[in-house]
Length: 402
View 1 (cartoon, rainbow, N blue to C red):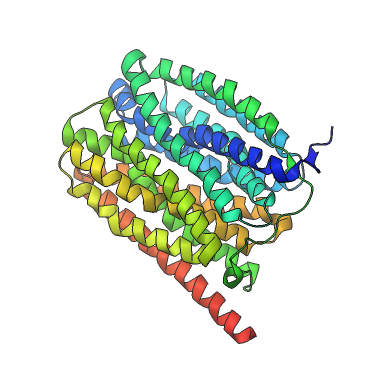
View 2 (spheres, helix red, strand yellow; view 1 turned 180 degrees about the vertical axis):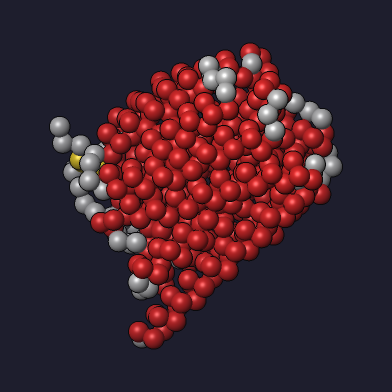
């Protein structure tokens, strides 16, 4: 069957955006930081150290990194519907099997597999697809789609926390697996490839690919490594940080949820901003916002202060990922956009893995989270320096060409 759209394309592109937002919310909400609700329960049940449990998430993110490259290459060649169905099935199965895991290596293996196939299929190819449906306004479209991911990253750990509290971690994994299956499979059937190729984002004339791809791709990859290593720390460790400071249980997921609800607005806002001032300038603005506020989390002393601070941080954090995604689209060729997105985002997932792991490592080492969040700030500064260098080089090349 032909999985392309012709006459219905202009209207159907918003169906794609909506379906992409839901897929990203469910899949990435589970894989990126859904395990944050399971850190303390698994640590308590099995007697493992915090870093060992956090490494489950990190290994899953490494799987997404590797899978994003492979699935991105495949998505440039075969129907996106097939890619998404493969991802939906593998993620659902991994969650169902995790309910019966009893050894640390089993969790590592399951979430690595879920990352390679499930996360690899349901992130980079989906984002590239959204951009390919839009001749203009791609920043806003990608911002809306990625806003779904932000909502999922808040809802999944929040709901999982209450599922664990009511019925235990094993039943929570089972219920999440069933939910993933009954939602992701139908949504995957909606995902269709556009007949026409994607084009450069509107409003990004000064960010067009004037530098060699041999320079741009490695530089973007290193920048994303820094930004994701920084943002991973509050995503993975905010819930246990709040639990340690305030002594609450499942309620600790509330500020994280509010942070990621605020990130929805940030992703849409900075997506639109990218259409107006250019992707890289929007990315730098969001990165500066996130980095400046990172250390604020370890200065808070009550759950009420976390409720107030989390959404302020979350708005800027949300804009970072939109900036990344729109910049990759603007700086890479349309014919290789899915594979380029997969390569760059692979470094992002490596960064997430590094950030989440080091957060647990320095907590185990010091008994507190200060150095975990201080390192996250340093990673953010690294990202800002690299993105600024790419932008300055692009501007110099543009001026020289005039």
